[in-house]
Image (cartoon, rainbow, N blue to C red; front, side, top):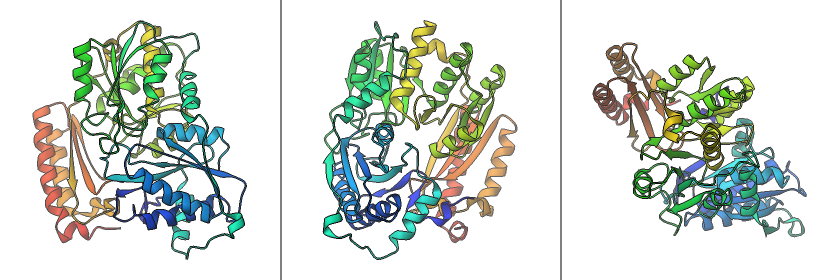
Length: 465
């Protein structure tokens, strides 16, 4: 059952929005913390605790305090991590035997956005049913436990050190990165004090960049969403590989020694074929509706099973578990290695690729050879006044669907068209893929113009579900 239309606050990746606007206001986040504390604590005062981590946005101080107050009012203890990557919070939630983990982050978005996402005691995203129960309770009057039962807050000891050791354990203990020069773009985000140390402690010469957060520069012209600075740095310094993380460290893109970008689909290709070569690929690979057609065709040549999930790492994870496979991810760089971590982890995915480079004695450029990347264009069409475009059923908009059919007839069997409302931003994403880059760009712009026109008309608004 699809619960997306039932939710007011939760999207595909937690609760997200512009700081100071609903739902990212102190009042709503306070209520969210209280409701989450009541639901996750079983509705009673509990001996368990909830751990809270954040990225480096200036608003993290504000939202952390609001969550802390709400959880305390529900009688739940809090353990504060400070700035830590999202996958670190998932891992530490498990090892601390916590009731839940909470991440304050808007991932790859700019600093004036922020969000709240939750992990279960198993280090996985909360089920839809739990998110719906939290939302149901948020509609109730807020009550506070007696003073003697209020939750207490403390600092989590050596969170960075514990996570660094966990990341290092994801590759064989005798394998080193000696002789490799790695440029690491930390996006001025949550991994700024962790990622460079992981690679350095494994023996690499590390060149850290975008590792000086000031609360406002997260993801600004850096990181996995803006990798040009990293590609320039790799060429300039002659590095063997560049690693570009996003603001909360759960995405990664790579740059080879030629300065060419290696996206999430190519990373999946490298990991799957490398594992298959040594008999360690468990089953197949899960991608998404956005996964490049070239990856699907490459896997067909290698006889590697491949399935597509809806966009969102939670859906990739769900399908991986259904198939009992280990490897999946998204073009954007969310890579899940279930045999290594419970969620997407940019550092661990990079380490898996580095392991393949060392063991196969090949460069990143050589490892990615064999997968043809089909030209793809992506245009985000903003929906005016729409905070949750996932509620718009564009399949029922006749004008848009006619334009889609026309586009598909032009591409014949050599491409794909995909339109989808974002679960994290007020935009509709228009994707066109094919083997002719000029045709792809032209069709993409034509479709985007149709969607943009419909977005301001009653026709698209009428498709809300």
